[in-house]
Each structure stands twice: as C-alpha cells, then as structure tokens.
Length: 99
Length: 212
Image 1: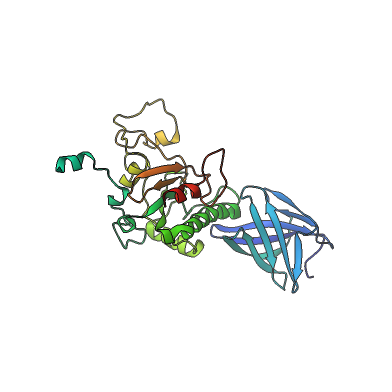
Image 2: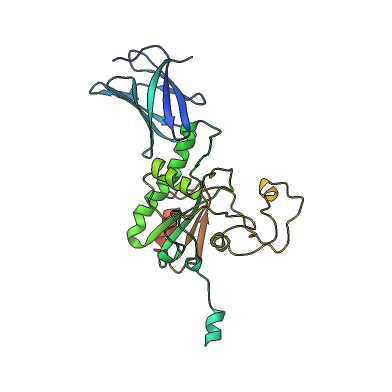
C-alpha cells in the first residue's frame, strides 16, 4: 500500500459548493481515525478493506447524516471518491500531510 | 340542480395553474389529475454557501431528494407522484433562478425525475395559490400582532392576505387524494421511505398506501 502510514493525510473533496477537507490517519493494521473537522470517527478493525490494491474505508456516520460514508481510493492512492449513502458521490484527491 | 352542484362543489388542487420548472407547461398539476400526490417545498441549495461542513450540507439535501425520488418510484405505477416546489423563503436555501435551479438538479441530483414547479413563495402575501390550498385555505384577514418578533413576521408573512397557516421548514410534505383534496401533512423530519411507525403515528408510506 502506497499511503503514508501513521501520518495524518488530508483529503480534499469536491462538492457542488466548493472544496472541503477531511483528515485521515491509518496504521499498519488499518486502524486509525477520520476527521471532518467537525466530527471525529475511529476506524476500527473491519472498517477497512483492500481489494485489487484499492483501499476502501466504510464508516457509520452518526451526525448529522446518520448514514454510511465510504472513502474509496483508486490504485494510485492519490485520489478516489467519498460517497454518503446511495445518493452522494464526491471525488477527492490526497493533498498530503494535514495539520 | 345546478345550485346543489355549486353548494357541494369542492375545489381540487389540480385545478390551480402552476408553471413547471422547465417552463414546458403552465398547468403542471392538471397533468397529474387523478393521481395521489405528495407535495413538498424543496430547496436544492442553488447558489447557496453552506454554513456547516459542505459535504454534510450537500449530503443532507441529496438525501431528502433521493428519498422523495424513491417513494415516487415505488408508487408511480399506481398513479402516485411527488411534486416539488422550490422556495427560498426558508433560510435562503434556494437563491437561484428557475434556469439555475434546473441546471443544479440536472448536475448534482441527476436521479430526480419527479415533477417540479417553478420557484414560488409558500408563505405570506405573495404565496402561490397552490400552497394557500395545501395549507387549508384560511386567509389572514388582518395584519397579525406587531408583537410577533419572528423572522417570518419580519418578512411580512403575518400580513393580511396571506394564509393563517405557515410552512416553517423546507421539505414539509402534504398528501392529496386522487380528487385533489387535502389528506394529511407531515413535517420535514419524516422520511418518505420509512416503514416504521413514529410515536404511534402512521408513516408516510402507510398513509400513501391507504389512499392508493
């Protein structure tokens, strides 16, 4: 896997209202955290899956959508899509280290 | 006999002309005559800048519209339709023109196919007659108390000529029967696809199925 482990990386996500940011940290066992800047989510065992070298992280979002959020990377690990529920799909790019 | 007919005449929502969002018809509801309809004041956030996380703001609106489309798809074969009415009166969340709203829906909510009217007002002196009807039709005869300090009051929504009833939120849902009569109203938080009974009340789907 190409992703920088044990470091906070920034995902810049495109929405119809303009770009938005998330922050992601993963360790060697795919455990870590995901932050929207407003809400923080723990990435627990079983939340991550890797298929054909593509990493996907599935999280139950408690607020404010109360839905499933999926962060899907492509093979390059430099971009992908964030989807919320079945109805919302937004592209993101990895911006490197966050704060 | 004619007089008797007049006495028992009940207006129908389908008789009230309203233009479609794309301008293709001025009698959008007439084409739905005989349908059970779920009327919803929508806000697609055209030209809107979210005050919260942009992703969540977009996802919330997508979810509202997606669930409306789902219930539309679920029952459309039984002559049921959702009808959306863009309105900017609630929190300034529909700032665009009709053309901009149409483009925003096509670009960002492409799953939406249920009928949508042109942008209207739903409260106050300039409210569209469709919503006067949907709110029960009682018109305020005099300006309301100047002591009302609500935003709606400051926007002139309590003045004489407007409906007594007021729609307080986006995505209020009002069901009408096949004959165009009012049936039941749900607030914004009620999911149109929920099967569960909330606090002992029937769900939107149960109420739709009851009159289909």
